[in-house]
Length: 539
Image (cartoon, rainbow, N blue to C red; front, side):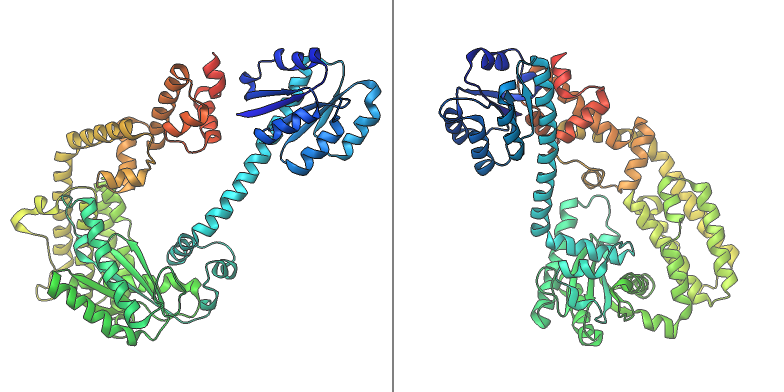
């Protein structure tokens, strides 16, 4: 809402301006009045004024003097001059003071209103732009750590766009632009295979405790190996719930021994299974994702060779060249996405495709066993992420495990995998109907009770222990609406009730239904209802 000040020594004209227009309905909360410039100066000192309407010829202090005072002490106030034909020379002086506009007497109230609303719109735009600039400045200063983390995440996923040198300078990492580095990943095995009954806060605390112990070790041994301070030796990032990433700007052999001791100690003292994979050395930060992918591939060997160890990617290349190629294909294969969406016909095709690729490579059986076991374990991880328990599916029979002593044929492997996925399919089909509808109902109840909170697809997925992508698919499948559309409708429906049944300001209503920005709320409200909140309230 805005405040208006009308300064006019003629009572009739002043009252006409104030009383002939319903200023409140046009967004003006208070309308102040003054008979001359001197009175106006006092009002300006005691109240927040957004738009000033002033006559030129007045006793004690005229409109030109008042405008000069406003421009000097309140430059954000917009000034509109009203004057008679005989005051034209004064009006011409007002132009040099950069007033917003002026209107000649006599005038109609509707014409003055139109002019004031135009100025108000300019004010809204200027305020919005200024607020955005100030907000961005504050956020840039307050969130330098977050920006650094986001930059590194983009580099890890090969999704960085922009001027790297500029961004590195801003987050105080420009000195590392051409510094050689290695990426190491620490996989938390318990969280990669955690069952659905493990509460989200338990997973979080489990992750944070490991992260803090590792951070403390690195800081103690090397110093300046952190996520917040000046980075010299390396950077630690709590990248995922089940994975911590290290970027090491040192000879990796100097840190390997300590990392190995750390994961051994975690297992011996706490029973925590950790695996570390280390990628190759690179010289450009734009290649961060390459070392990261290699580190993930190296860590994947734990599924065959066991956890609580450190695996180097260069050892895979030098000793077992067949590992690398297959692990890259397996980790990124679409079979897991097809499994998430429940498209088991596509899963069968994926199995055939994967086996054909392995067969065509003519690689040793050890590599085939590694590849197939990775497919099985990563499929189990995918199913667990959907909220199902793999142990409940396979019971005492256990998972199919392949090793080089068994010497399975490709046909036997294919049949075994088909049986494996068929069992998963049958189990999910038996559970999906009632379980899915009940789950969506619980989500809808949660959203109806917590719509004022900062709800997102990610936060909802955490609340119900299900992956965001799968949640989105299920929600649309059951409700025929996108998650965001459903949440918006809840908020707008509540907003309508508050608009009709309370005297709360638009800003207050927006805050109560989950919108921090009143202008954004108004935009969404109009998009949904066809009118803005003020128009809806006045209907």
